[in-house]
Image (tube, rainbow over all chains, first blue to last red; front, side, top):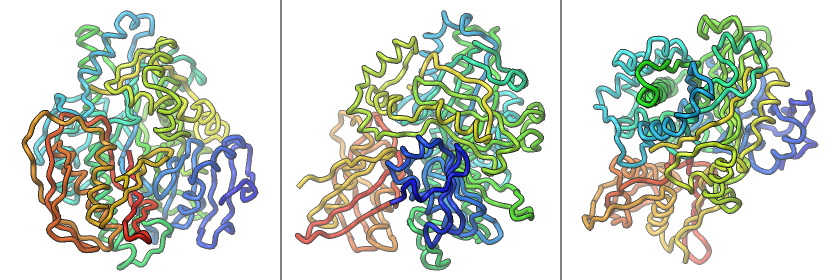
Length: 482
Length: 136
């Protein structure tokens, strides 16, 4: 068992388990938390899972955990591993089943006062337009050929088909499309699962929220991001749905025998399922992962299309349209370059429940944001605040990664034992938050008491310098699909 | 003997499954997974049959790969299965027919069946037990 005595305090917000803690560690494990949060983290197996990550072949500098970390499978959620491409591995289990689960934020030109009279109708209409994908709801069914085009074409492909604005491409990580995507390495099973799920929300912690900008911390950056106090925005949280889950499942199944047999890689948990990054199998997975990421971007783009449709049907054709602030993944593997031991090397950054947070000047971010840094979108738990942060130069120490949300502290069952669905709705309504959700059980499972306090989580990444606070958003209406 | 029970897990769905034989263990694991999906079945008496064939490196992997394949069939066809007719069953291979019915909708999504902390073992009394974690 890991305890506080195994840690070395680096700063008030950074703690380290040295490499000497366990013989198979190749690098130290570092956790961005306050002292109080560190004590909490001993309650589950997330730290042990982080130490396991530190043993992966090719890992550079540190295995990292963000303040919203919690126990996952293989690596912990909230984990970051930068693995050298030349001699390291690629591990689907270190990125998660929901490939490119992420966030998209749409900005309006309206204040809360202007939208208030339409709020309930907007929430109802958005719920009607965006299916969860779990029922027989109205869904678009694509042919396998069309799915192939989405897998290789991402958001630009959907824009060409009329599902959005040209600017939406620019306002997205990797411009909504990773070029090395290859639809031929995605299984028929995965494509089958994906055919009727473009533009579907899923379940669990996936949601849409109408929010208002409650507080601005950084006026200059907010202005560049096009944010103002009391502005109404729409937040979307979802991923690659069944297609991405199937891709990860397929490759885990293929990689476990390869890892144990052909490549003889020893890992503490089969779920890591890794092969050398540069092996033919590793390259195939990288292509399939990129295809799933493109699918996820297309999924969020289609949801944005449905939301814009609902927006116009309630506020009128002549209303100000919704513009995309940014779209960013928090479960993904990306090739990036960093200086390690005085030499620039290429690494595969595995982010699982962690958000990329590029600094000012990065050529990878839209030109209009380059002066201040990349927008980072951090959702809170249902009914609590969310944040918009901005990337910093200091973030290099965490491979330009930051947190991704509040992070669970309680199991779904424990949440249901503590609070009922109707009680959660009553509490949200007492805060004047509209709730649209088909399942009251789903509401109880996602109750705010099952999560860490988002303000505490964001304070850590802000104080540690991984990303800085720009705006705090509070919910006006929560929508959970169908 | 209880077929399966849901265990505590902070973020995901963990179940403990029991069976008097390996075949029953596989069936009960399938039923446990389906409970996690909270299906609303359609009012129809029509029985659906689906063929399934899986090969894996060992028994624990076979259980996971079998459940993953069933999850695929459930989600693509919007069906659930209440029985399995095994045609072939070995530690690394299973061939079977699934018997089931159409589903109106699912109350919950299961993203995947994981190999994480997977445990499949035979107890002293000859019965089988497994612990499986699902990503939800």
